[in-house]
Image 1 (cartoon, rainbow, N blue to C red):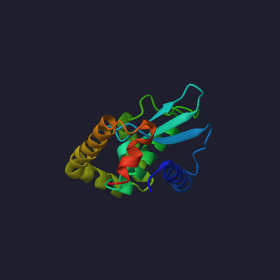
Image 2: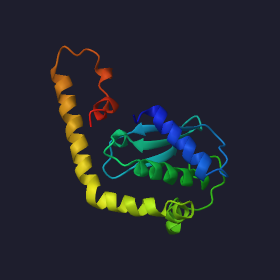
Image 3: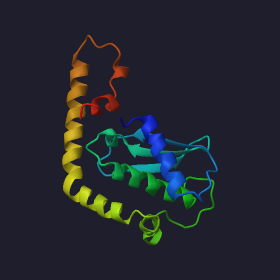
Image 4: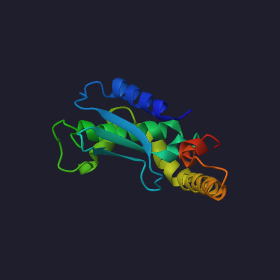
Length: 164
């Protein structure tokens, strides 16, 4: 089941295995967030100076290959290691300067996953996105029309994606 605990374990495993030299200088929070078509994730600094890594909420679905989730996490960890939205020294003027993220991903063993991601985006992502959003909207409409449902907090994308 792809839930918050699963996502936290993925982050910790990737950090320990593939980024062991990157010091964790602040609290790093990872969560599923948003339902973006054109963005798999992002990293930002919160007001309290914690770092938040957001992974597209649609990635909770098993229709999304795990290597896409892992690559998204690794991509954001590279930004962290380069000093973007982290207390570490900033190494570059721009987070993607000169293709540095792709180069670093390849250096850390993600070359094959990058090729698979390119193929996934080209051949599958749009269809999966449309399917997941259709399911989300249909379930949301059912819940909004049903006066019997008083606890709308129970309606979450993560609950819907369990059915997919």
